[in-house]
Amino acid sequence: MQVMQKEGLTSSRFAETIGIQRSAMSHIISGRNKPSLDVLMKILEKFTYINSDWLLFGKGNMEKDDFATQEPDLFRNTPEIQPNVQVVSENRREIEVKTPEIIPQPAIIEKVIPVPAQSKNVTKIMIFYSDNTFDTFIPEKNKKE
Image 1 (cartoon, rainbow, N blue to C red):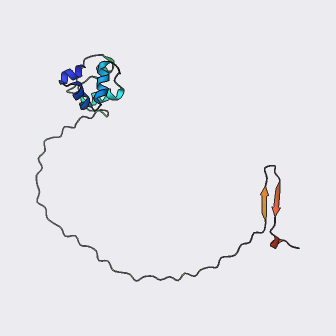
Image 2 (spheres, rainbow, N blue to C red):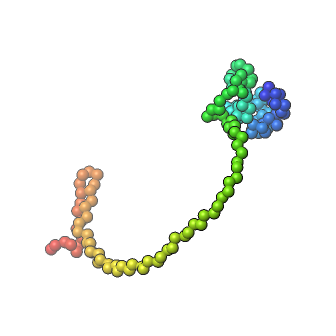
Image 3 (cartoon, helix red, strand yellow):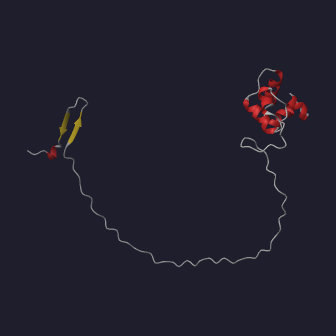
């Protein structure tokens, strides 16, 4: 690979640099396997000067023509250039923070009066069948004689 030659890397060192297994790199170099999209993306992420059209389609030059003036985009991890700024230490003073006083409040005692539950009795049970008929059952104790 031309990228390996330009970088002066062996195939195992190149595989380590882009984050793939050495065996995968060996299969690509021998022609047994074609590089996956994942491998190609790792190459483009690691070596940002490489022209993606050249790598994917074999078109154009290996290096981007406008590499030095290219703006960062959403798909490339290019470091931001930070301006050289000196940090000046400032004199600081401590400000006392007062903790608010917590005044205990008397407990509120409420008396809970239970409401007796009303008893419920089953008066009728109806069963509806799929043929649109039904049966009604009335418990023995509720039947009027």
